[in-house]
Length: 271
Image 1 (cartoon, rainbow, N blue to C red):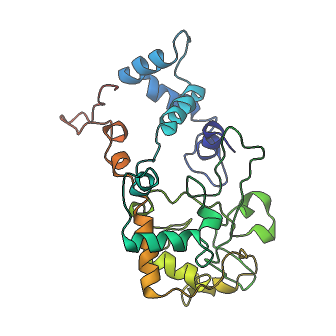
Image 2: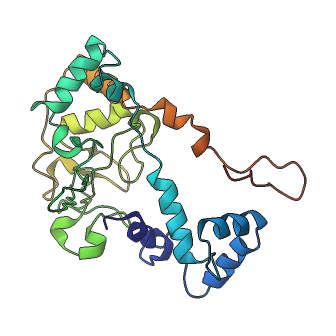
Image 3: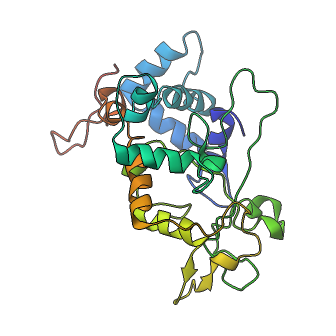
């Protein structure tokens, strides 16, 4: 899925796993909720002029996609550094060199302008969407991951793709804890430790297993001899990817005003 519109159909209408749970039995009820809001009636009529029924799931998807396309993070300290408008500290510079170098090798999966490996543009000839197993689990010594978050295997049922996930963008990574596909890693420090170890060894409990020896683990995930200083340097660099202007922009703030009466919240006027 390389468009926001197609991607959104998954969480909206998907059944395995169910996310938002939209189906033929509740579609009309959900659309009716939008239609029952005067603000949404006004905004959808303005956004989709001339349509007899501007409030539809097709248009809801288009509206959300239009909003998402505006959520662009490009003013972090690192972005400003590339423009010659900011200077990295020695610690951040060392972390950058580790990140893009062959010792830490982070750039293999997070080296694009968006710090992932899913990036494409108008001149991209072939769109690639690789998946990676990072050795986070190995429940049975054969590569098993806990249900229902078992990566692309859930769609392909190919045993070798158990635990394989797309590499996410690292932009604003310092403010998006917890980490990994299931939120099972609390801090960036823990993430760095797992990668330095070549995977995660869960020593006890129901998820016990040594992901370092997962047979499906990506060849890129190998032990890395990082000193405590080098780990700190990497984290210092990752923190330069935080875009405070995005995080504090009124455009992306909660549009629902606090409840002023017992009747519930009221929506702020469209901007």
